[in-house]
Length: 222
Image (tube, rainbow, N blue to C red; front, side, top):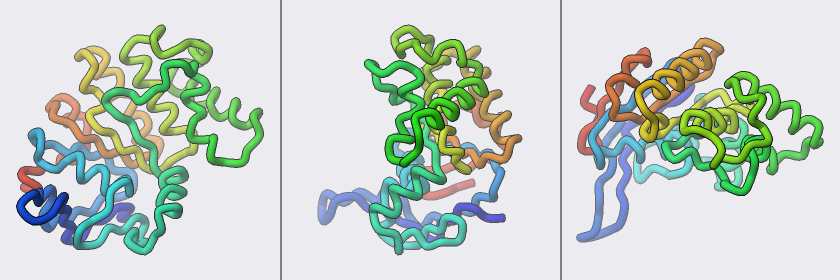
């Protein structure tokens, strides 16, 4: 079943002589449960593509469908609610708040949901156990290794049981050993049914994925 679909999507930033064509007539179908790498050089449009898939950025032309629903018809509030329920984000710089401990960082997406503190604690305990950090929940980001910080970021992306994980260079700041550990974790999550899309320039990361999409100058070339 197709979970994400782009149809002839173009994205333009700026106007007139300052216009930048980030994407041109991109069409892409992603099946539920796939694990995909999006590869391309710097400036190729891969992060723009990821932002559109995450409903952070809109399209200049074309259509984007998430679970067969036309995203163009959603208000900004509706898109924010959709992101909070359906999509988890994992970034290269981890995106952790330095003065929050691990538990509080992981619970951040729950601030927008009316649930009891006991339920927040249960959810964060569950996801931290899944990534092997149940004994680090009172630690702060500065007390963790790069791999541990990325596991915290992955836990935060999972806490709302998101179906889709969008990952922008998630291993870019990690050494090869830690990269392997994080990618093995992504494989485990994929086997549990998560749809995972990873923007990367690392061939080793791409080898863990079932499909590779290559993008150059705003065009999908493979």
